[in-house]
Length: 110
Image: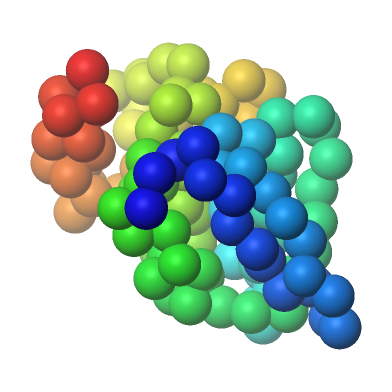
């Protein structure tokens, strides 16, 4: 699946059509996932991060922490010493276990 094809995320009793490029990051919040969009909007979905991760396989998304999945194309800076990722105004922690995966994906997406 290409990152330009739309995906449909279920939000209650309706499905929301989103382009992957419009999604900055996904953050686990208890039994919900907050989706941060490039427009500045957020959506709260009743689902698990693991389920969304399976939906996003083969796209430019990467789990970088147990509570976060990012769109690697939205990454604006990486503070290596602090293990922090910047996606615009959002700061996301990077777990040590996921660092190698991020380096590899950055290399692949070039």
